[in-house]
Length: 485
Image (cartoon, rainbow, N blue to C red; front, side, top):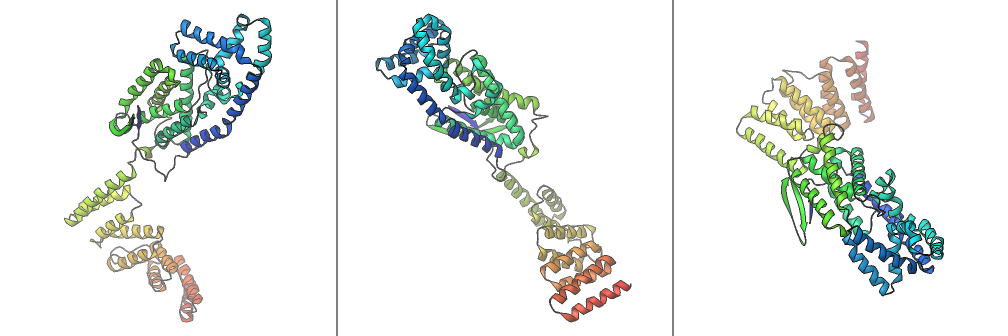
């Protein structure tokens, strides 16, 4: 059974670069580093069989497994013992050699007990041939060199093991779930904090697993400990909020909604149960439980400080935002239809504050303010709309607003010289010299001599460029008069 939270959809306008980077790193490690394991193991098996080491080790391996089953109660090894006896009976030496070479715990058992197991001659022969194979090939297998080995634990291994995987199904499954969880948690924390929290969860889950397997040489690899940490962080971020979960059971799958944290004890309980009753599968269930616990714990302990989610994380999804906008916009338009202009203005102002990218809202506010052309609000909205259209490179609309204001609001609350100057430049850039000349006259009336001189110089130059000599001469003469004033 698989249950994964899927409350958010990925926003490709803000790609989860760190999540994608972790996935790419895992894939590159698998393809270019771990791919060498096949050659290393192949060379080890070849030398191992050439030296007939399986003849020495196979009987000892049977005894080794029997001791662990009888004395240590590891009943899960019963099936392995049966498989080994079948390999011996069928003389499948290559497969048997791989089994023996892959069991690092058995190798150290031989090192510690060789004087009991073999004669002096056999011990000497084994040491001369087996130890070099172990040192040159087996110890350099990726799982042994960079995985978490409880009997030989290091800090570096607690990080590196998270990027190793045991096969294609292992890496594909992990990367798929990593992406489904990672883009949401990365959006909440930001890429740097996300990476640090992910690695910390993976490291702690590796420590938990090592603690339950202390002294053993069985290596742990895989990103699932860190991924479990992401799952714990995911539900802790949403808390008691009801979110959507995807579940897969056999061949059936569907979605359901539940309080986010309600699933945390279910997940942890399942992993602990599987650790004790399904350990023979080879899955590190206790590492998953540790990752879940530390992920949720990090958010609970540091959620108001270092791991505080970014404000953008709690913004509604794009579809939800659009739906809310349309609803509020429809209500505001309904107020206009009911001739309740004051309430419409308040609703459009609230929408404009939340959605400054939607200039249509400012257009409505301008039209509402125009109902009172003698008010300062009309002048302020006209000025704001002209600035907004200028920023959006809409000179035609800017000039139209200016022209409309001249007939309605200018007699009551004149625009400032700076406002006229912006419109003047918009007219020049759009090639509308007729409007630019009208704006120039308003600019002269505003009384800012420096702006007037600059505008006069630009008009003269523009008319000269167009070979309109009388107009150019007019503005050159005017410019001289202004200089004498």
